[in-house]
Image (cartoon, one colour):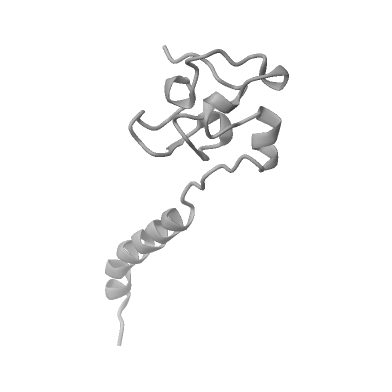
Length: 102
């Protein structure tokens, strides 16, 4: 028979298990170029593809790794983007939300 004391001792472990399970299922997902938010911001996985009349704001040398919104390290294969609700972007990518990292 489970007593109230046993239940109260097990409660923190159960809560922690639920929190970790939720965090694991809420992992950030990789942003694809065809997604509506990516299209609206002109996101490209490779900054070198952001040229021409549709990308007049792009300047050589700009990429996600040197953007203020990039949350990963430049060496990471993908990192979160603060402008895109933490979606994972390529550090070599670019979009019109690019702001120089200070």
